[in-house]
Image (cartoon, rainbow, N blue to C red; front, side):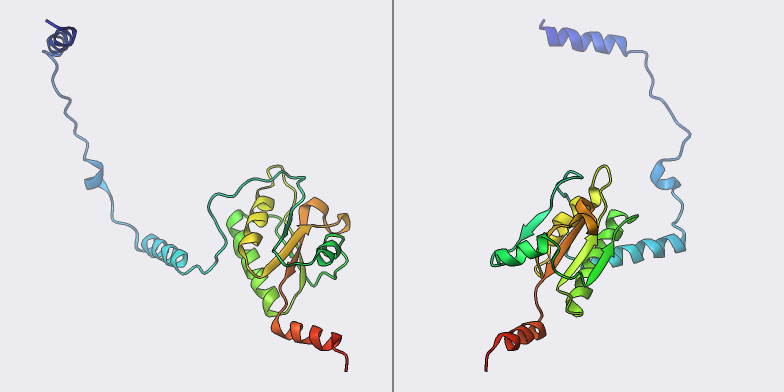
Length: 189
């Protein structure tokens, strides 16, 4: 007799007088109440909103940055002189967004809408104040999200007088009207 046969026989012997437990409880599936119509409509509306969300900013895994980290990004083709002036805060800030007391989802929506508005109103340079916080969650999100927007040419941590490591300057692409104005300004007759 092998060891496993011996174990099987011992188990059967120990379980010989055991009876299955009977329960008076109703199985969970049968006991569920029908959803409240208001709750059902709210869930449907929330699901619909998620499907209709045109916000391309990622809401999945976002790499964490430290609270004191310097944020810096530039798309290929952005001139070094332009980046230097932006980094030093020499461009006028045409628009400002403050994300203090925002949840991540609120911040995601606010950043996306703010960037759309900046493009619509020909804003070239903006300031986004994300705060420093201990975990720098919003700062990490802003760093990640701005890279996802093709109309953002560059961004850099702001100067101290604009919020330091708790804010970023954002440089947007020029609109066609701005390009034409710049071209006519520098064309000699």
